[in-house]
Image (cartoon, rainbow, N blue to C red; front, side, top):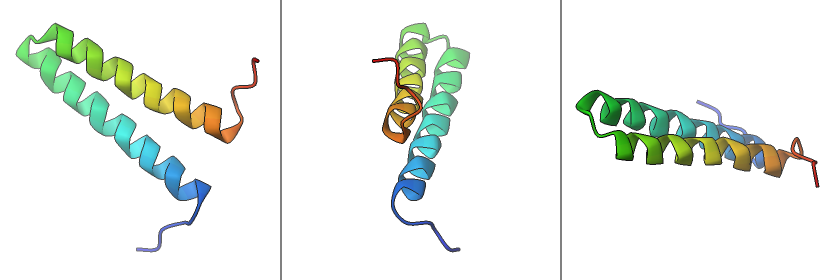
Length: 61
């Protein structure tokens, strides 16, 4: 399958990372490991925020 180059590919990679982290957080939550689930959810959110910052969507400063 063809993969885009440059920024488009990095965006896909960040989205995939976010999805994997959320999946792992859900598994940790189901096991009852709430601390790990919270850490993974925070990391997933940070991955998406990084995407917004790099793409220029977050221009608050």
